[in-house]
Amino acid sequence: MGAARDAASYRPTLPEAAVFVSGVASMGLEILAGRLIAPQFGSSIYTWGTIIGVFLAALSYGYYRGGKAAARRASLGRLARLFTLTALYVVLLVAAGDLLLRSMTAFPLPSRMASLPAVVVLFGPPTYLLGFVSPYAAELSEKEGTGAASGHVYAVGTVGSIVGAFATTYLLIPTLEVDAIALVFGLLAVATALVLTYPGHVRGETGKILLVAVLLVAAPVAGAAGVSVEGQVVYETETAYQELRVVDRGDERTLYLDGQRHSAMDLDDPERHVFSYTRYFHLPFLFADDPDEIDRVLFVGGGGFTGPKRFLAEYPNVTVDVVELDPAVVDVADEYFGVEEDPRLNVHVGGGRQFLRETNRTYDLIVLDAYRRDKVPFQLTTREFMALTSDRLDDEGMLFANLIAAPTGPASKFYRAQYATMRTEYPQVYTFPTVGGATVQNVELVATKNGTRVPESTLRERNAAGAAGLDLSDEIGDYDATPPPTDDVPVLRDDRAPVDSLLDPLVGQRYVVERANESTDGARAGLPESRRESRRLRRA
Image 1 (cartoon, helix red, strand yellow):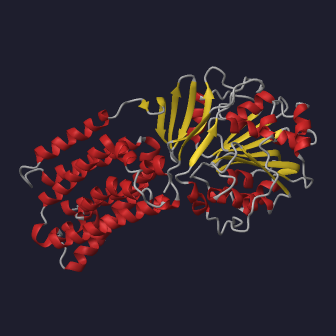
Image 2 (cartoon, helix red, strand yellow):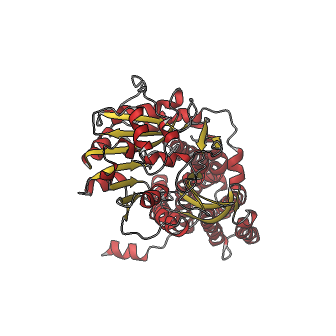
């Protein structure tokens, strides 16, 4: 009972409160760093390894310098000053973080380390300052003995880190934008500094702290609201999984996920294919002996629902299931990309592999459109996953996979590893590069359970007969009948799927996306040559 009464009556001292807040802020900023860095450099294992390493290095250096200074300089005033300086740096993050981030992309570093300068500049200084807090608090602790004081302080700091991790992950990121989350941590630092200096603990600091608070509140105004380099931002949010923006430019609306274009829609003709690679989704109808037998299709990955919408419009007998991990993407597709309720459309929120494992349905076609240029969920690439898709397909079923890679050269490793992995479970795999050459592009794979090879001539005959519902003459022309070499790439497995290292050669390469010029019925005859857009890949 005595211990319970002591616990109930315990009131943390000011140094202990400071340590707790430093733990909350440091861990919260670390998780926030991933969301801020990902749009420019991706969210690969290299990016996260860089973030964790920089934070640990900055904290360690702060602990070291703080420990040396604590015996002669530790005071509540200096603790308050640390939090004030941290908040001041957050002002810089909010006001100029995007500009600083973009300026950090030109360093001549190996692609795996590309995000290092940005993480150091943006998050090294505030984390270093927070590292001073624990040794200062240990020096000011009321505990007797160095061991007791140090153990108590680091226990309190760890509890703060736990709170910061869970609060940022489950509350702040799903609710607020990145700048708003940074603002929360800045205001938390300001509030802590005020508590440490008021009432009467430290004189002469309150005015400085309040000035920083004013700068914090004003910092978001420094950005141009609603405008981006891509066009007019009509909606943006931070979801539990990614940064999401809907951007209008002229008569075209684009969905950006973590700063990367994912889907696009022609506002004047919503059913038109804006990017030509989505036309390849229809190729499996040419591989079927009877295309009318393809009547149940699953899309793994929804995005702007370009494929599902066109399938529903083109094939009256087809029922489409879509499984999308991020519920916010589904909501945005409904509101901004013209996805209407349809008895033939069933949308499921969750992971693609989990859905396939739990469903008892079978499909004629599975379209795997969940890969991005630098954010490929490895669990959807492995031999075990391919076996699962095969189990959920009918006897003549097919798997279609949309990859971003080069068909040849160093940047082809992921494509060739995926090809080798699919061949372990499917007797035939067909390759369709969408642009040609060795450039990074959308490479489409069609895997069939039917072991008989379908020649290009048969595809053309079926296309002429209208089997796909739209003219795919150009797409058939991209058919690459030569199997890629796979001796130097692994078959991806659940226990070893080095997707990040396979994607690493893509960094810095030009990613070419062909834009479709087509009318709603899909005819391409007589139209001018498709325009091509390209941009640099940046990923750690």
